[in-house]
Structure formats: structure tokens, C-alpha cells
Amino acid sequence: MPAVTAFPVVGNVSYIDDFGDPRLQGRHEGNDIMAIRHQPAVAFERGKVEKHVGSSMGTCMLYLHGASGMTYIYIHLNNDLTMKNDNRGGCRNGVSWAPGLRNGQTVRRGQLVGYVGDSGDADGIHPHLHFEVRTPSGRAINPYTYLNKAKRLLYPRPAAADPIQLILRKARVVSVGAGTLTVETRRIRLSSQSTGYPFRRRVVLALPLEAIVERITSTGLVAADLTSTSPETTLRVSTPSFAPSWATQRAAAGMLSVGHVTIY
Image (tube, rainbow, N blue to C red; front, side):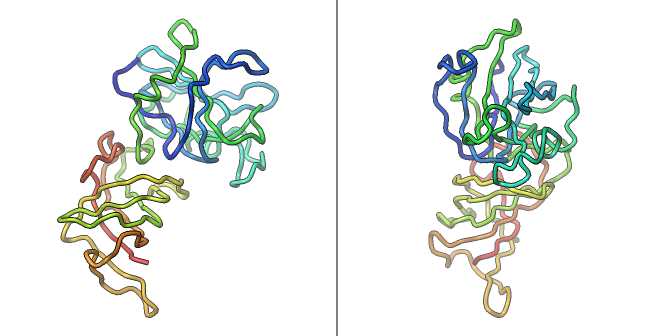
């Protein structure tokens, strides 16, 4: 097991140590990470992916064969085209797995590999990721301790190394300091992706002098000053373009900057 890993779901989740719990098909060999339909699933560590459709029930799955020799199994990936349980998407790229994902492709730690859902025998149950960890011999071990140690990410890394922007929609002001803006995010979208994902997390952004700040008024957008905003003010924040990296995914204080702010 590598020393530093990425938590396999980006966004707000809940999970317990349910490894070994009884199930209809036998003992539970992973941990269920409860999430929201379509939340991004990312690579726990660097490795090669294998897409798989399990059972006659159409369970959308992914095997990540880690560089460490461990294998991670992602089960119940999404098969819905809407936020409802419509079962119209099947198991395919852009629905269950990341767009363009190929069998045998090497992915980076924290790279987008799929989307949380309720496919297979989880149909109609709360969307979740059944996450397994298996040793090189194939033995399932309890993921719970490893999940607790894994690093939570602000965004899933795209496959391409092209610069991206983050758009924080309906973010709330926490505080404005000397050269910093602290917000609580509500929904995040990458400029390279058409849809976003819900995520409530506090983020401290660097606030450079050249950042553009505007306010929506009845006559249109006008220049504004963030220092006059009160806590809980709603904002739309865009970062400047930046190269995706492990550090920016972690988003420590000041790692990401404000490019443009719209005050509602």
C-alpha cells in the first residue's frame, strides 16, 4: 500500500466500517461509501484500469491495478442519465466510467475514473461506491483504515494535462482577509467538463490585486469590492487557468487563486 493515497470519491460522503458484515451474497468484502449520484470517483493510487460489467444485473465496475501491487475494486458505478434512478445509461464511458477511459490505461493518483451510482444489485438503493482493497494474492482486506488515511481532494484530475479552471458556484463568503478569500463551496465544476458536482468544503483562496470582482445589479454587472461583503454572501468564483496537480487537488490554503468573482 502506498504511503499517500487519494480518497476514492470527491465530495461529501459518509461511510462506516462494514467490512465482513453479512450480505445476501455472503460477507461484505469492502466498505460502502455513501454519496450522491454522479459524484466523481478517482484513482486511489497510480495504476492501470480494467472496466468490467458484473453479473446479469449489469453492475458497472472498475478494477484499478495499483502500482503497489494492490488491486482496488469500484462497484455500483453510475448507469443513470439523470439525477433520478432511470437506468437508461448502461455501463459506458461518460456515464459509468470517465470519458475516454480505456482498458489498460495508466491513470494517476486522484485521476477521474468514474461516477458513483446504484447499478447492479444496488438498484434503487441510496447511491454509493462499494470499495474493495485486495492484496496481490487476491485476498480482500478491510479498506476502512486506508480510507481514513487517504487524502480528500477538491476536484478530480482530468486525464489530460491541459490547464483548467475551477468554477465554484453558489459559494458562501466565510471571511475576506489581507490577500485571501475564504469561502464555503456548494457546487464545483471544472472548465473541461460540462457538469459539476455538489461539495460543501471550506477553501482559502489567494486574492491577488488583479482579480476581477463584480456585482450583479438590476442594470447589469458593476465593479465591486469584496471587503464590503458580509459573511454568507453568495458568490460565483472562478480561478485563473492552472496546471492540475496533486497539490492543487489538495487545495491547501492559498494554493488556488481567485481570477473572477461575481457577487449575487
